[in-house]
Length: 451
Image (cartoon, rainbow, N blue to C red):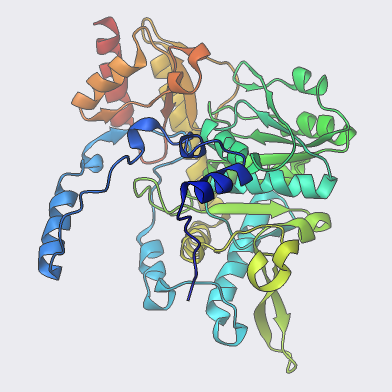
């Protein structure tokens, strides 16, 4: 039975708030936007029978927008890619439905092998030596990378590129809020990290520099010189990949000097699903393996020489390291990791490279079409993968509303994250877009931009 302490008096409540450094309950939950805070008991109604509950849920589902009826050019960390039917067929087998931590290797060989294959594929794609058994998502993997870099270097200062996804930056700040240290924001120039600024500010107290490539603007970062800047001061370079399909075409971060590569694996055969569940991946060099969070599955042989798989390392707090743990990550996202492994094995090297090339070429065609529209211009000149930033002649919010009326989800208004860039529209194109879809977007924007 799990016991939970509930403060019964105002004095108890205030003592708990003081212990965690908050003056009020409102301050504790200040990061939750006010419109979404519950201020009165939930009105959930009385109990329902199973039949009544199913009917109620079906009614709620019917109210959802039919996104597939729209042509979507959204991106910004969640990407619509074609998923071969084989992925759902294999991952949907009953053996995998309850994928959980394989504590007992003698009865978990299939699960362990699937995770081992996933780790191997991630190492091949990132150019790193070792990968773990996956994390929650790209944002939390980024935060775990920051914590790991602090452990490895025994330093506190973390440099975050401003071109890193804003929600990833927010998660890092949340993770580090209770840990002493500094977060330093690195400015961007022409859509990529400002290396000159970075060189003038990284010092001997810096634990790591965290850079995303392709970044939130779609820009492809040149990681090698950024790694040199970090390494000259004894810091680590952390490369974040939010669009994993890019690894099929771009030079692996490990070959550019990255010490940790982490990111989001949703693009590898995992549907958008209105925001989750997604899949964090995490890879590093052998020298840092004992500081890595999560679990590591390894291959071995039994005493009769037969191949087998085991949890080689499990650095979480509950059953192994306790207070010495590197992380409190308590899942291996087994089913999502399996889907990613099946997708990558199905596509193969050439298939993944072809998908990445389609993304690059279709985005380039779209960029040229939209950038040539009267009143529109490209915001940055840096090379991009499958996303780019467009400066429209009208407020993006107004354009997006009118596009949606024509069943087009035209992109993401970057103004909410980067007010200084207004007006700025982030457009994403993947292999799922036909040329007719792109031409339809261009025609609609050209017409609406003149209105």
